[in-house]
Amino acid sequence: MNRKFFWILAIALTITSIGQIVLAIIFYRHEVSIPIRNTGWVFIWISAIFGWLPMATFRKHGKVAKGKSYMLTTKLVDKGVYSIVRHPQYLAGLLLAAGLYLITQHWISLLLGILNIVQYYLSAVEEEKALLEKFGAAYKDYMQHIPRFNFLLGFYRLFFTRRST
Image 1 (cartoon, rainbow, N blue to C red):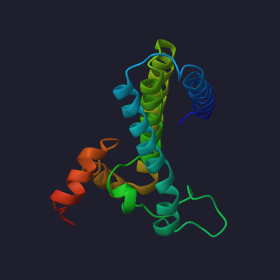
Image 2 (image 1 turned 90 degrees about the horizontal axis):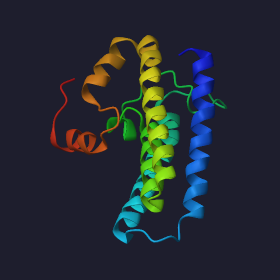
Image 3 (image 1 turned 90 degrees about the vertical axis):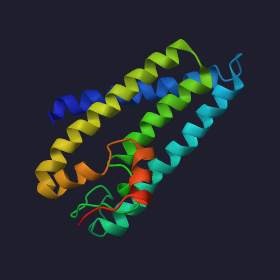
């Protein structure tokens, strides 16, 4: 990924994410549909799971050097949360953005959420290019079996289909 593009994307994502969180605090008490708000909370809790699990999974299965960031894996990880989706932390961001909108149900939160979702998607696509370079054919095969974000399909494939290896 172009370093300049990466930093612009990271800064924009930070600003829009903080904006959505601030709006969720400000507009939490205004009149909204309670079932929709509750669905937003479900999205946020699911996002927390997908956001935190990769850290333990990479440390356990990614052959990370002692004292290094969990992101510095030396092995392709297809176990744990990575047997369900390829980008669990980006998925967490998508779910958080959607959840924050559903909590507030405010048009500004919707706009910021859409920006966040686009930015997370672009980041995942760019990261896949780097991972294809790093892991080659193994990552290409992984991409064929594990969905990018669709965790429902990922759970279905994990529990109801057999992978030929």
